[in-house]
Image (cartoon, rainbow, N blue to C red; front, side, top):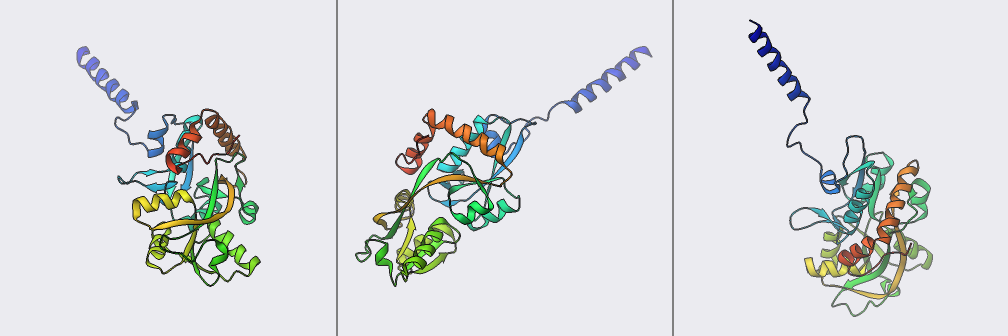
Length: 276
């Protein structure tokens, strides 16, 4: 009888220990698997980004989210063990509203400073690269050499982008007579409009043009001098001052280590980083 009782107690103890043990083969998010710093006590931070920005945030041939901003955020994540970073992708035009309504915690999408964004949101203080905006046209176009040549022409840009904000302001202040068209499907729609002649120009970066020419036969070229050489930042909610500070600390370290510069060369084709 004693042996039977001992056997039952041993069986019960084994069951309890099994129930308390961590589950094997538990799934992890992409960000957790990539950072190597995940912790059950760490605060989850949702980063809003897109999938339509060549070399910055896009899906590669295997469907993996990658690009300059994405890989930089992953490097920052490694420096901040108190946070677990997870990406949430969406259309660019939805990013600001998602941040405002607490669906995401910060935006990684080459965000430049403008008055409207400053009023509502918080930029981190340490810029991570310069964003050179140019006029881009079809490679066969011989009439447009600068923004001054866009009078009476059709320029396609993404709604709410800084390219759109710049062009709207330029149009108004210079009475430039540019017909602004807003693309429906990001880079793909813009590329098609320029390639087929439905639009005459767009406002973009040299590295985006190079990527689209190589990957999507965009048939574009950059013309004229840079329209803007603005610095870019991550965009947060006004109350995220602690997260802002920690991101800046990590960025400074990554710049000193040469990581930011190397990522820029790899994804953007040159060192567009800003000195700390």
